[in-house]
Image (cartoon, rainbow, N blue to C red; front, side, top):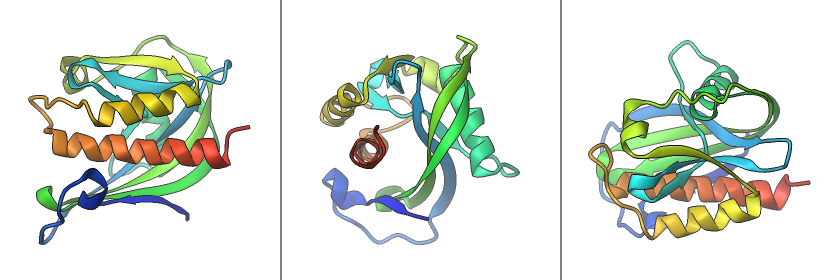
Amino acid sequence: MKLIAKITDIEIGENIIDYKNPRMRKAARGIVLNEKGEIALLHKKNKNEYKLPGGGMEEDETKEIAFQREILEETGCNVEIMEYMGYTEEIKSHSSFVQTSYVFISKVISNTNQLHLTQKEIEEGGELVWVMPEVALPLIQESFHNLKPSQYDDVYSTKFIVKRDEMILKEYILNYMK
């Protein structure tokens, strides 16, 4: 398995502090391509956040099943996994939290046109946008500097999400785009 990126407090401009017994989470996320070559982004307007679709794995799921479920929920699309890119690690010392995300490239095989966003995603202004990868990267990069907290997440946590997805997208553009 290839490590795409390891994001620590340093990568988001913070100091690493001592922490013990971090909470651990596994997730699946990645690139979802439509027939035009555009990729899906979840835009949380109220936080000024752009992120790749995906989320936490449930206990009995494989990383592939979790990816397909999360993509259906956040994009309304059934997808075919084309490639496994590798994984990312987020190590948040300030919240004693470590997340491993398994990253896939997929293509849309059908679109239900129905999102199943969580209440949190709805209240944060979640909407699906489709953009070319070379447009997505600056959207993600610019959002890093303009993030706002929500009642659910502070800017600290969201910076990890945006930085992680920037690294995933850079890897995709550099090594996988055709």
